[in-house]
Picture 1 (cartoon, rainbow, N blue to C red):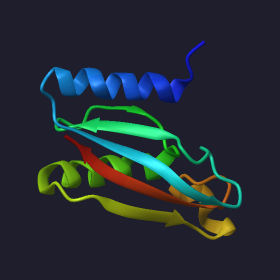
Picture 2 (picture 1 turned 90 degrees about the vertical axis):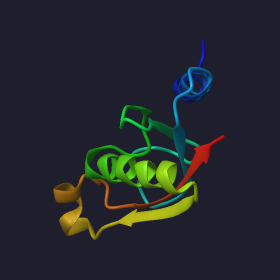
Picture 3 (picture 1 turned 30 degrees about the horizontal axis):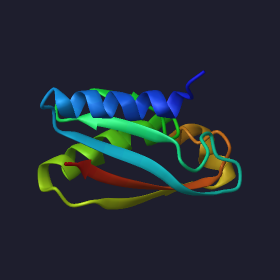
Length: 107
């Protein structure tokens, strides 16, 4: 049975073969409780379509926006998200942990 992340990577390959610009976001570090583990992927195309997950909530929307910038500029970015426990629910990190996400354009 394939894992969900392998399905996301297969989708990224299919999107590239179809001629779509694609960025891939990967969780590279977590601290504390995080919704998705290290190695989780989210792919985004130049139209803002996405598949996969790196966190959920508002973080996911922010990563999609940054991925569009990475596609346009062609330069990778390291993103970091984290909030204090008392504000975690408002921004989509229900656990109050921190995550680092690396976003790069696929060639």
